[in-house]
Amino acid sequence: MPIPSLPADRPEDFPPAARALAEPNGLLAWGGDLSPERLLAAYARGIFPWYSEGQPLLWWCPDPRAVFDTGAIRLSSRFRRDLRRSAWVVRTDTCFDAVVAACARAPRPGQDGTWITPAMRAAYGRLHQLGHAHSIEVFEGPHLVGGLYGVAVGRAFSAESMFSARSGGSKVALAALGHWLAAWGWPWIDAQVANPHLLGLGARELPREAFLARWSDLAAAPGRPGPWREAPLPVARLADVSAA
Image: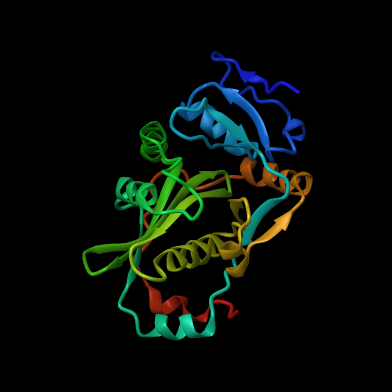
């Protein structure tokens, strides 16, 4: 079956997600651009871009879909004990570009290079400037030791990538994101595709149809556009999240 191409002049126009291929899992369309209008239209539909340098721009909506329940990020008892002694602090939206750059540099098992191309970095930087892409940043003193970034549409948050410069940095960023989103009444973090690491942290898989039915309601709900300016969060406060 040929993969449909996206029209250049209609950024909101995507094929129905049910038409995505089973192999490769979730490939839905190609082409278009990475304009803010198209990216926001995609994320509102549970669709995201993923491609490598030299490939055409590819759009995906896999089945099943991995999600975290924001109030149920799973950290081991040993890790939570370490958090109680930690001086790390988590911040929001203070160094978005640095987080994206660190995610692009992070090695990925089984991957040669990164999908976070210069074009992707620029596109998400524009979304951040418009108040729709956000970073969670873990600091040890002045040093950035972990973080993640993603896109918010309504009350739906899609996590794009995370990194650790110190052991546990990405887990702390994920737990802090869950802490804040749960407090705001946002129920899910979209993790897109499951892997053993994410499943160990509490991710679960949903059939695409069930995911999209809930996601569309969340994306249409009032959100928090603009910079996230949460008070710095000492990671010791995250020690009481669910134990593994």
